Image (cartoon, rainbow over all chains, first blue to last red; front, side, top):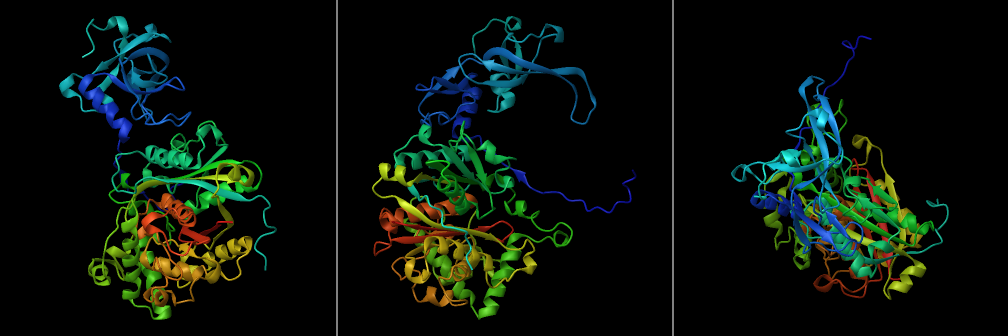
Length: 160
Length: 394
């Protein structure tokens, strides 16, 4: 069907947004930037460790603003996908491997690209560690975590 | 003509209320603001989240917070995880509609304890939340002219003034009263001690509306806990009863509405009055929180609510009838003009205010004379909805 002669009015919704990370989110990002670890909150009563951190327990509604802990940015590949095309349908070469990583010591996790691994070597439950931007280049944002790489492939060093 | 088929049998009470600070550019997310208000309401009611059987969340257009499907996104901050959850939405009328929705859940017999939360975080929206309103107008007929909300309000205010010979000085007095009342509100964003001259000296945004006749951009949340009669009486000695509710939408074509008089507000009020058994609202209502996003709107709404004669609300205001110590105190909280206007949360803030006023817990804002019945009203959608709730001590 030829739609070129259909009469239509085009429109846009012209607004942009400035989002804040929130009270808990701001602490998470400042901790990531300064110390290279993940700030989490723990509800002792429900035995839940929130990542991303929450100011409150969504189960019992306890105030968690004083219940902070820190965990190392490592965990296991809970699931992953191989992205072969970009948003516009153009082929990605090489394809990107994107994983959801359950972070050890928490009940949550983070999404990130899998780095330094061949596609055929990726496994569910594979241990991975976050690859962080060098401390000076971190800006307290999600992309301070460049991605995740298999644990054994990382040089042995202490968490910065 | 009766507006309701039969009066619901189960009575519903408010047993706790909570409010976040109202502010602009909050660091707190909408979820965090919701949690502050919801947890405070639960504490005040003496119940915990696990006791709550269902949750209502009111929040206005997704475009304010900039999160599509934000009702669902706000779920955890509202205490709704793992529970029957409902987003109540009639635009700016959502705050009062939220307790109407919660009331239906309890009055129907479905639940005994319902948490009602309302939230808005408008300061995310850039360069100004007005932008989110540019697309509420008919995209073929009206949008080519680039109308915004301020235009429409200014047109409506001008029509209201012309119909009854009202002066802008009369309208400015609403800003003076409400911003003054808000000085006593600990959560207020734009409380001030002003004169009519100060208001009229502020810049003209769109004639006849001046800057200080417009409510601000706000972030905030409010919450209440609703209970059935037997549960309320177990939990508190001072339940505040929802005696009547009403709501009504006029045509979506604003050009087809009576701009000088909000008929839909009258219809909503008549429904609530019938349910509450109110036959003489001016005598039987002791304190009112009409919706005041713009100064003239409070007067416009008071007339629709039958609490003032048509075109005469400005005279009543000038005569002191609506002052905190007057015959019918209106917006003793400070209203949207003084406390602030995080859209849905602002409507529920009015319910919170009545809860505190009717329990005698409003502190420095307390209206004298032990008020026994109050009315809250909100307005919105495409400037076409009236939502009304009548609350009382028995």
